[in-house]
Amino acid sequence: MPTFHAPDGTVLACHVSGDGPPLICLPGGPMRASAYFGDLGGLAAAGHRVVGLDLRGTGASAAATDPASYRCDRQVDDVEALRLHLGLDRMRLLGHSAGAELATLYTARYPKRVSDLVLVTPASQAVGGRVTAEDRLEIARLRREEEWFPAAFDALKAITENRATDADWEAVAPFTHGRWDAAARAHRAAGADQRNREAAAVYDAEGAFTPAATREALAGFEGRTLLLAAEFDVAAPPRTVAAAAEAFPHAETVVLPGAGHFPWHDAPEEFVRAVTGFLG
Image (cartoon, rainbow, N blue to C red; front, side, top):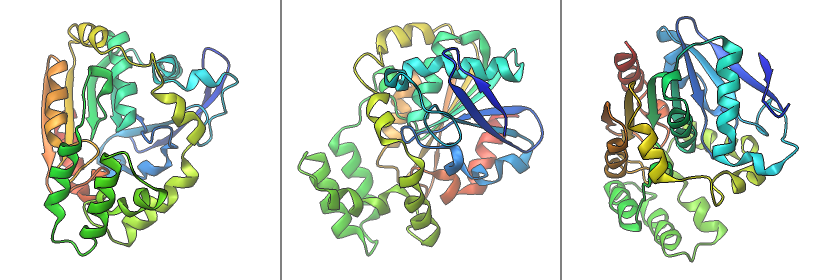
């Protein structure tokens, strides 16, 4: 497990698997340890050296002495420190969910340092994206034949109407995966111990995102971008992912059928095929 220092001295860790050109992977959560990536559906076995970064305060990385440094834009320096540690002139960068926003901000600040950008079921506040309540409910209704749907849908409505209880947040769990099976339940259960909730509360704090400036900076990005959406994802519905793609000059969007917010779990072969096909 390689470690290196952020510019402020925080010791950061990354996890490496597979052989081939490196693919730097930034986790979501926000602020969830990269362990939840697993083998990314077999991506490491498909000719990629997967490098999963534990963001500061998560996994094997040290906690920050300054809690304000957990803010997304502040962590761009950590990604740059990893690039320098690996000795890469340009890198292939993947971000999942909230990690896609960190990947986006890094690319906006260092457009010459990214050759290929992969955003998986991305959050898109960084480029001014917004998911409405109806966006989420429309996707949720696609699951109406599932036995768990009535309770989960009522809970989702409570969340979208800002009247949710802790029980509602737990009840919507089946919407996170394309199949609510034992593997999905285990993945969900592991999340509680992998996430730094205090850091997550700071991640998208006021000032983290300046969408107009980010879009202006991204206009100069000469690399290619793949945005991977998932058919059943209520967190990043395909419509909002397609809208976010407009911020990137050379972008394509792929929707993985039957998948949820963690598509390498639900459709591993399709996920690996899409990423590998894009990266070449």
